[in-house]
Length: 255
Image (cartoon, rainbow, N blue to C red; front, side):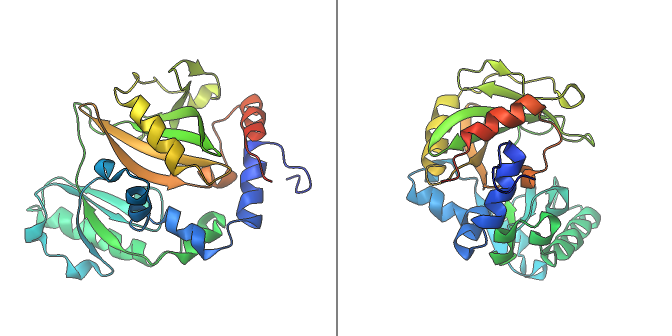
């Protein structure tokens, strides 16, 4: 790590973590519940995924107010340990497993996973969210990278059930960018119908930040907001080539 002159994507993410994000105000953007108010303020309430119930205790859920299928999530972390798909709430065995998983997740201080300090300022909550689905098992995840309000490229995550993340990168005209190491290169995805709207929303939402990754989903041509990530992969990316590390690093202005 070159602290005096960071140049790569990962180095600059680490610099931002250490020098800018030790501040409670940034926890709001990482909080999957509170960030919804920011999305509304920016004029994009129409792309928020419906939420049915929010609690700080899993035992407070009233599942009569929740549809048969949904996702249980916590608001303060990222990765499989912080969500569980519930395809049938009447399957009491699986529902109990999901609730125990969320109860355990609520106790985790995610900021200690990779020293992303701003996650420490999030009050852990658990919520039930509408389950998005299309003809695939899971909808694609379109992650738009924005630098000072300018969208530069999109990362698409596919094959997310495998151990190693498979990804592809595209420019804003959906031409593939060769940012990905061969062992992480995915099968790719078609251009989403709502890409233009996604880009518009991403640039507004990511306007205040040196770098922000704005996540979207699409179902039947309609975009949905996922989350905002200020520190992608906590600056520990395993899938970028060395050339991509430098190219992206040049886009991140630290001043």
